[in-house]
Length: 323
Image (cartoon, rainbow, N blue to C red; front, side, top):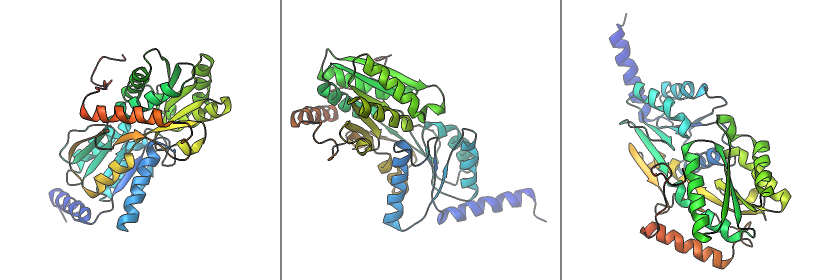
C-alpha cells in the first residue's frame, strides 16, 4: 500500500508527464465565447492556433461566477497546459490553482498575477480608445459624444478616459457623456440596458456612442442604427454588426495575445499597446464611407505621435486624470 508521500510524488510526476504533451485549455468568462467581443476574440485566437498547428485544445464557458475556480482546477487535474483565463475576473481562480499546480503553465488576460508559472497579458486600452475618441469627435455633427461601459471597474474607466482624451484632442470644445451598465458581471450581457443608456445620451445631443461593454454593446449598436446615429464597437472588429452606422471599432487583439501565449509562453507580464499592434481601430468596407481620408490622416498622425511619445495618453489606472 502506497504512503501519502508516495501518492503525492506519483501525482506530481503524472502532472509533469502529462504537461509534456498536454492540450492547452481556455476558460471563457461570462458572456461566452460567441459574445462577438472580448471572449470571441480569444476564441478566434485559439481556433487560429488549432488551424496552424493541427492540435486540439480544451475549453469551458463560465455561466456563473462560482464556476471559475472549479473550471480551472478541473483543467489542471487533466494536465492541461497552458491554461488561459480570459478576463480579469478569472484572476483569483488562476492564482489559487497555479499555486497548487506549480509544474503547469497558466496565463491570465487583463490582469497581473505575480507567480513564476503565470503569464499575465495586459493592454494599453487607453491608447486605442484615444484614437476612436478622435474619430468620434471628428464625425460628430453636434459636438457631443457618448460612452457606455459594462461593469463599473477601473479597466472600463480606462477605456472611457482614453476615449475622452482623444475626443478633446480632436475637438477641445467637445462635450462627453458616460454611463456604466452595472456593478456586477450581469453588466456584460444586458443589451436592453445598453440600448436604454444610449437612447438617453442621444436625447442629450450625442450622435456618436462608444460601447466598451461586452455583449451589452449589441444593444448600443442597435439603438444607434434605429436612431440613424453612429456607434463604435470594442475588442473585436464589430463593424459588420450594423454596417453603415458603425463608425469603427476599438480593436483589442486578444486573439494575438492568446496565440502568443500558446506559441511562445513566457511567465511574467506582457503589455500590448499601439507600438506592439496590441490595440488599434478597425477600417473595412463596412465603415469606409464614414471615415474620410482627412479623419484617418489625423488619427494615424496621432497614432505615430503616441508611439513616439510625443503625445502622452493618460492611463486611468495610474493617474488621477478622468477621476
